[in-house]
Image 1 (cartoon, helix red, strand yellow):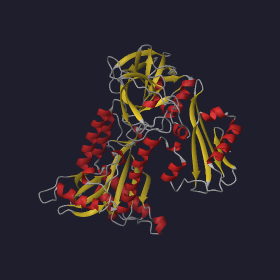
Image 2 (cartoon, one colour):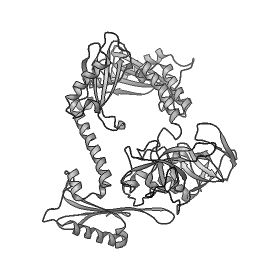
Image 3 (cartoon, one colour):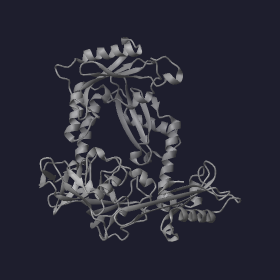
Image 4 (spheres, one colour):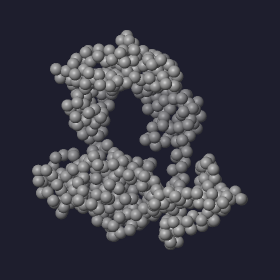
Length: 581
């Protein structure tokens, strides 16, 4: 029996996934929706549940094989899909509802369709655990933190089946009751604990299942603070404390440190600022008249309210270095840092540094309202479009999206329009050409560097083309030599007349795998074959075989790769379950 504590959960899933391939594909004959199904994933006995049909590896939760659910819709992917793990060339997602009862609407999200089984047969049982709490009984809640409504309380030792793993919560079933318990109240059986460890991703989405409305409410209130007060680094103490309180009220974090207001017995802001400036003078030789702005924070690390302390940001005149100073509650300097990135490379004095880019000045600021004499929105966007057209993107105006804001600096002596033009790529890429137009006349004071934009634009167009080819051809690993060479001519090519042909390379690879790993021809035939002729660093054949197979109680993953000298036919590298030879 293994006790599960939250801090133990780090996962090695990503490394495993990179060397895995699934030949399991359920749900080819999809019944009329809504339809009942169960999770039946070939990926470590579990499937990731995502907020959107995208970003599979940063899910909201993980649900284990055997979990019953209802499929209400099937949609194409919006982006990141585990295409090399699930054999579903259409990259389809199922919108699912899990745990719905008469009193609870259930968990809702997206799971890859190929990780579901509509037949609901021959599916492994769920994870087994028991409840254990210090007070002798464990409360089971109706939902994952949205309310305090109880399903019931159960004595220590009560058996449960674990359906899913969320942030802080486990979705469980006890007899005929389904609900949520805190993760620290679970003791998993040893085999179940191993499945859990293998299935957990590195990160979970901050927006947890069912919490979308709460998160949007939090973000809306937080954005009002940014609009009213500008750069959060320079917020007054009371606004920073308000932001941390706002985050806690909604169940989120504003920063890793919790901002609070100092008490009457604490040092005054003036005293703290004087100590910080004195430390900057003593440690870095910066006189007190060099500072043009400063900001204070009073906070403590999450979970340690007794460790309250100060942080002071000091911004210097142009050409001089900024400084950050930390002090404890007694006013003693505990740490300091100078913003001096260029000194070592340029040989400049300790107190100078590279001036920051205008990007920082014009991309961030307080929202404002244009006055009667300021350039209007339509004029600003027309001028911005002229700049965008000069980039020769090939996009028409009706194809792009404009996002425009009228802004001002903290001092209020400079105002401008910031116009961001987004090409027709997925919104999550955040790929834009930014133009700042100074009020009142609209003179252009900043644009995205054209060379950098051209590179990112090329990347975006290539990514769109690649995703389309994946949909048409299937996973990249399965493409032909011609297709790989056409797509990546700097990395992949073809053997010359004096180099061994493909059929001989495959024969050498199969013979070596059979010899080294005691495989049979039939076992190799079940694996997915990938062929590569690599030319980026020398010339080499690489033949790979990948699959995922069940071996009874646990999932067994296989990955093999053979590199071969194309001149001699000598095997130069072998990669398999036992490592590299």
